[in-house]
Each structure stands twice: as C-alpha cells, then as structure tokens.
Image 1: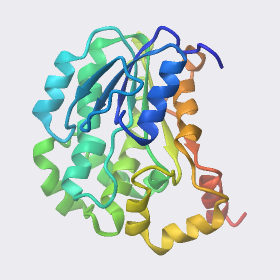
Image 2: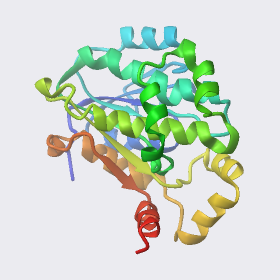
Image 3: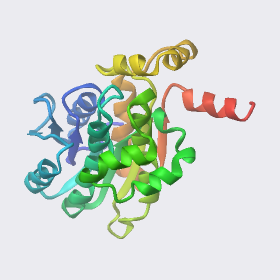
Image 4: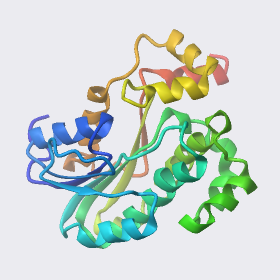
Amino acid sequence: MRDIVKGKRIVVTGSSSGIGLETARVLTEQGAEVLGVDITKGFDHVEEFYRADLSDGATVNALIDVLPEGVDGLVNNAGLPPTQPADKLLAVNLVGLKHLTLGLIPKLSDGASIVNVASLAGFGWPGATDAIKAADDLGFEGIGEFIERWKVSSEGGRSYFFSKEALIVWTMRNRWTWRDRGIRMNCVSPGPVDTPILGDFLKTLGARAEEDRRIMDRPGAPRDIAPVIMFLLSDMTSWIRGTNIPVDGGMSSNLMCGMHGL
C-alpha cells in the first residue's frame, strides 16, 4: 500500500509516543503532511507540532482555532491509562476528544476521515448503554458528578473501560452524521500493546491482564496498529462508516467465542 495517503494533511493527537508516534512516522513515510498534537513535546515525524492539554476546554478551543483549514484526516489517539484519576481520564479520553472533533468539522475537507483509537477495553459496551447515553452531552464541568452518578471511578480501571465503550458507540452513532460532505468516522480497537503505558494496564487489571497475556502469543506493537489507521485514512475506505476494527491478535474473537460457548 504505497502512497495511499500521499498529499493528505492529517492531525494526529498523542503523536509523541506509542501508537501515535508510529502512526505519524508511517503517515509521513507515505507522503502525508502530519500535524502532531501532544502534551509532551515531540517533533519527530511531524510537519508541525502543537502542544495542548486535551483535558482543558479552553486549550482545546485554542487548538481548534490555530489548526489550519483543509484537514483530510483526524486521528484521535491521545489518551490516558487507567492509573490516572477518573476525572482527568474522562476529560482527555472522551470529553476532550469529542470537543476537538466537533470543533474541527468545519476545517475538515470534504471526504475527510476521522479515526478514533478505542480499545479492546470497550468490548463490553452493550452492558453500559444507559451510562453511554447519559454521557451524550457531558462537558468538562460535569465530569465529577457524572463519575459519581454512573459509578465510573478509577477502581478496577472502570473509568478507562467506560471511556472506550462510549467512544466505540459514539463512532457507530455518527456513521452518517457528516455523510453529505463525505466525512466518515471509524475506530480501531487495539488489544494489549507494548507502549509506555502497558505497565499501567498490568498494574490496574492484575490477574485479568495476566490471563490475557497467557492466552495471547505476544502483546501487540505500535507497528501492528499504525497501518490499519493509515488504511482507514485512505480513499480506499470511503464506504467504511461507523465501524470498529479490532486489532488485537484475536482476543475479541476469543472473548466472543467464550461468551457463546464456541
């Protein structure tokens, strides 16, 4: 798949490490103009870098203002691990992500692609639909109250799981929202990936994470995820809408088979 994103202007959040850094590298290698966004400075593989804290509404608004017109792709990759406080995590992983995306819609080119990096952790979304619906209009100022009302604290990593469940559903529900402009939204759900935050997951999930490691042949690597993101950003995928692509070494299939006795 050579040059499938050549000449495209693509915003990648969380571009300084892990999946975001590898995505920026692959996109740049394939001829895209990458605009990187991160709270940590990182100028590798990006044409322009914007330092921003996506947990702060005013900062997100400022980022929207300074990003250029004519964006062909948006990769919502920035996210916090489950060891972080629940209010901060939901602000970045869900509220800030949605705020940035909706604010950038007017700056997206017709035919643009939005790719949300969700997670295998969002697999259980069908059991959380009430809370997900309640989060539809969640803003930065209401996060604390929401956490208490819907029991999505940091305990057991629940805030992280919920953020990814809600992101997958948000992706599905916006399958046709901007269809008149040809703008599509999809998501990728990695399984355990060997990035700087893998240790946070092992610490939070304990025995559950160890069981996953026993079943899998290996953890994923950013190089396993980035090409799938690039594929969804390309013009080859204009009729893929509202879809969640698991890139998890078969873990979601393993879970599905187990649920149905297969």
